[in-house]
Length: 153
Image (cartoon, rainbow, N blue to C red):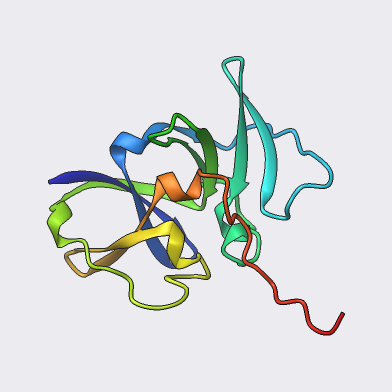
């Protein structure tokens, strides 16, 4: 069994393994940085530590969230020691699911425009489908933005 922190983006449920979650915070002051990718919100000051924050909705190509009252920041840590925040619509719960039931995602974009290389797979909790993020890939710093083809230079 593995504990999964479940959160939402639009009408979809996502999850990350609880051991990758350092903390869950309410939305707080973010210092923006000009000239950064559209999904990069800026930096947070969490008890004196600067942590970069990405808006997972924008990263997935979705529109910004109108009502931020339930929005949360998940502070994630990778196996390599990289720490970063992701902004999500809301955190709903923590579920215990058998990791061996993780189903692969077959082709293309896995869900809501998040590239497949940032997804581990899908878990089923009753009637709910949870798309599990690959935190280590997401925080690796590589291929953060979907590539666009350059046509006719």
